[in-house]
Length: 64
Image (cartoon, rainbow, N blue to C red; front, top):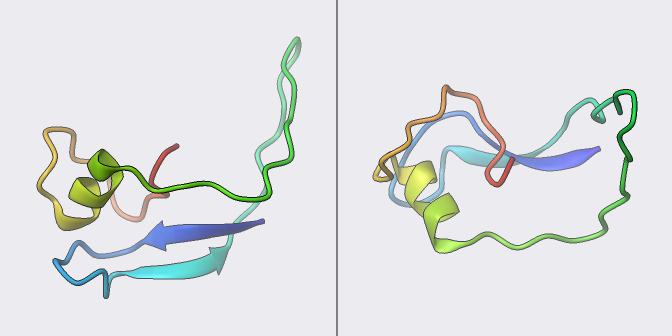
C-alpha cells in the first residue's frame, strides 16, 4: 500500500516521501478497511517536524 513515510524530521517536509509499505494484517475479530484517501492533521505535521509531545521512532507513518 502507499503511505507517507517520514524518515527524517524537518521543517520543510523534505524528510517525507510516498512509499510502498506492507498492508496491515487483520487480527482475529478485526476488520481491514480499504482507505482511498486520508488527511494530515496539525498534530501529524508537528510530528514530522519533531515538535509534538509524542516523538515516534523514525521511520513512521503519520496518523497511525
